[in-house]
Length: 474
Image 1 (tube, rainbow, N blue to C red):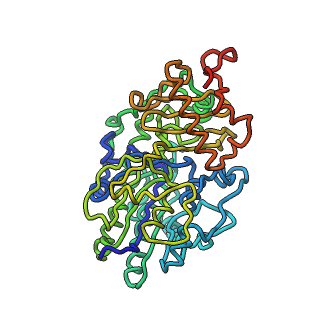
Image 2 (spheres, rainbow, N blue to C red):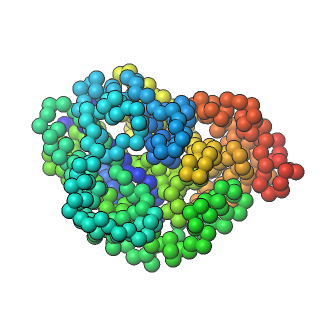
Image 3 (tube, rainbow, N blue to C red):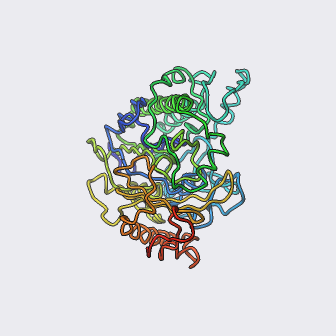
């Protein structure tokens, strides 16, 4: 039976690039279970995170609100800033009112003041006890390679990916005996660096088979200073592809390990006869550089490497493969979509909208872009906002030169055209549209004339000729 109020299995990876799926056909990464999920459902090819930072984006997924709008700018382990407050208008609270049993499995990176229960979860399984039990059976690993990763001596069944998958399967078995719909959300901590896959995945990929990203190499010509500073901070100035490919092979191995865990959960769902009653969503909080532009992690840039995300959906109401959906969607849409799908009253859309109509073939002509933000963290403040359309990526760097990339001809976003006089008209339109979206979201950086005029009046350096020339009257 295909329920009007389906069960929901929400799977969230950490730092899984959008292009690292077999179905994407871009890099030699093996993901048979995610590919099958995409074949059976829909793969959103233009899905974006509103902010490529772990904590704030998880708040956005709960609320549908851009975190900048209420002052949440970075992770909880940096300077204190406002965090999301529970609300009856969020989809989790509405699910509870509708009789759903809701479970979070994995970490909680949303608030120090509030627990998952405060936001509407019935229970939280943080896996700490399970991981401590595993640790008691192994010698402390002598890691040698820091953030760049290395093989793990932990058996696959004892790895944190498969501990999480086992917990999901156990919870599904329990839920099958209950007469109420359920939501299970599992938050993997991988493939976040350092990548340490277990066998057989730690040796699945040969480094010599790893091909460079579209965004590698990047000479960082006419780019903001912070990007070269990133290389210095991480001691990456002289790192070659021969070195990076070791890290990429481990990153791919970690993704394939997650795929194996996803397969375990999907098999359990089928064995319990709940496949046709369950909405399955796979996504990631954001992407990863992993050598793209010569950098690591995800901070201080708003390239596709980090803002674009995988999003795969299988909805039991659609008994056919939907293929690729190219509409722009965001994590901000998640709550509105779940509320729409489950017919939940009293859920505010926030800054998102339901993408359920897209599964029925609808279009959204009034949304032709994604807007994302970043505010720095590891090495200090650095405010950025960007707008990504099908043709362009414009990055507004408030305290440095801006960036403009023509993505059709420059998919790696290597050539900054911000100073090119032939693209002033699209630049002007992008800045105005970015301002409009940010104003709607109550972004703090468009509330004053001092910075607002960078967008509306083009008061920005062009990056090529110093203080003497500005980029026209854009």
